Length: 419
Image (cartoon, rainbow, N blue to C red; front, side, top):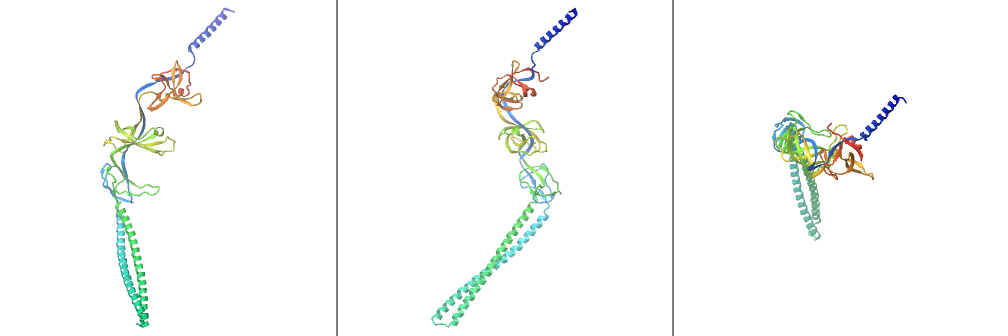
């Protein structure tokens, strides 16, 4: 072999050896992961957050039971009103005419009732007189019969007495029939006047309802009509006109919408903190007083998570709070002391030898990800309570794509998540 050939062979061998040394120094491929630590917290709180608006605990949407034109509107939005105070008046002309007609009808029927009562009394008196005459005639006929049988009076007198008795009995029958007719006429008159009085009360009720009054003490928080507008009443599938809303601002609620994933963690009387965009830097304490039994209707056609209505009663509302202000509520569902926590995304599920899934985290030991079962507790923000792992242990917390498919014993290298 020539000198040049030997030089090429030595260069090739040296290059191969250098490659082997480089590869050996590099070692096996490692998965890049982000690491965190198990942290001990003296107080750990689990909360549910939701958004909504401020509402009055007690309020009334004022409508109208009669249709017509608003002729008077003596209140404005923001006015304080008392129960029974007139808030609006509807044109009463038609209702007043109906009341006048019903009253006149009652008066006419009362006169008919009085006449029928008088006729019934006369008929009853005639009946009593006829019955008395019939008794007298019967007694006379009995005496005439005894005298005739004793031969002391002629047969003609006995026949005359019997005819008089029959005539008296006929008069009684006629008087009784007249009495029954008079009583029937009085009963009919009484029924007609009862109907007329019911119509009069109904007409008066409609007239009274042309004056719309406040059912509660409060403040006019919304005024939706103006003087001169036409008010309509609700019919099937068609709501009536809402004139205004009166709210009692003595008690204030925060009405929020809670996601279905969180609603089962809520219970009545749980504490909450309510903040408002209109009052930055302020927080109002309160308690859960109502949890919706059913999900709220979905809005729009797109698929969305279901939400539930939850009401938080504020402990000490301020006069500046008004219905309609947007708010956020943070409801405390659990509070623990001296617990170990890890980032929520670090907790994963992995199948056991028998196929059942276990909850755990991947602990970093000797540059390996070791699956360690844990028992999960309450969730607070982005952390979750765990037991079964020591404080300060280094664990894998991401990235999500890697953690989702990470297996026990895989070699890992820790990266800085901030880069």
